[in-house]
Length: 243
Image (cartoon, rainbow, N blue to C red; front, side):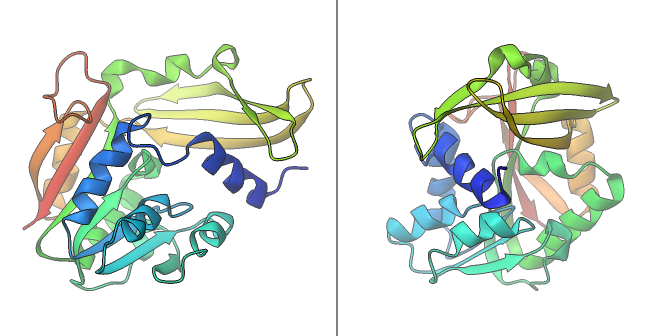
């Protein structure tokens, strides 16, 4: 009723590139524009790398993502390398100056072994001294408590219908939150239900995984304006360097 291709198009409709509305967009674009070669891990529909090309980035840009429908939209630009796969599948060897992982994609690495394999692959893809930039939701903010049907988002679909996207948390076990995302018509007819688990690592645990993988944390921020991590921070924005 609502295909993977539809879901990818809906994502772009809900989260269009906008450095003001979504300040993380501007944060990452600045890093990308300053790096000669960039690998976007979990690139989705390719918005970050598309923007970089449109803004004049002349270097090497590559994206990897497991979602074929999202990659189909990313491939609308043929001047960027697109690879289907998860982070751990990245097979590049010291080829990039910067790796990014945006849209809280890092939190999809739920299992310890998956996380370690992914960090090892990202590190291997970076040149000596290369940087890895990503963000996770700070567990202290307990963002999942707002993932309720009452906080649904309504968006106008391409055919003029109003669609309603809502969330329902099924379980919180340790630092892993499992929830469903339901896409429905405004009248209530359900079109699609997706189930996702995300990991909410705290700062010490996150740093420990990075250091074990051969990264040194260069900077961590509590917001997109590069403010410090505080008890009120909702994000952990991290820039780590390959050592």
